[in-house]
Image (cartoon, rainbow, N blue to C red):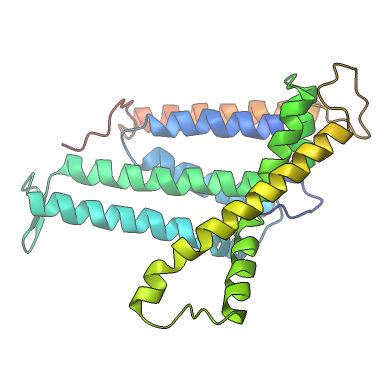
Length: 268
């Protein structure tokens, strides 16, 4: 799901810091939006950018997004049920459920925020080489090589987490532990994974520490790099164009009465 996939695309060639900065900016903007219009437009624009700029088929994007789409939709359904039972308003009603217009707007806005931010994060991971990300943090933002290498090790550990869990599960099945037999076996499954997973993480941490020491990280010397990341004209044009698009979109939504800043959840 969250793994880098190499392609020769416009989005893949952009500097990771530029993409990360844009994601932070858009995340803050849609998090302060009371109405769901801006998060929905963000989702559609990001989906279009992934298809055109990242050369990723829309079916692949939605397949990778299925977990977060499910979480967003489940969150909205749960909140609709809870607010409907609470009966906070009589503007909309179905059977025993009653909602006010503010309830529906706030719930849809929160759900679309989850989906939009998840899609932006997914595209960032899929189109960003972890090595380029760490090099960009070191060369463009001045991050210490020690912290950069540690961040790279942690970043690469996340995609392998599922593989580690599958290996632990297979190892336990070989030893006669049944996973899918009975309710209590499934309930205790996470506890059987925790200890082996922690042991594996500890061993990985020891190897990372040894690798950092062998490379002389933290010795206080100037280091050389086999590859250097740069922010070129195309990166700044991408950043500037994205800011202009969102500024224009926000202005249009404000004019249409579909955007208002909100510093709370507005669900009472």
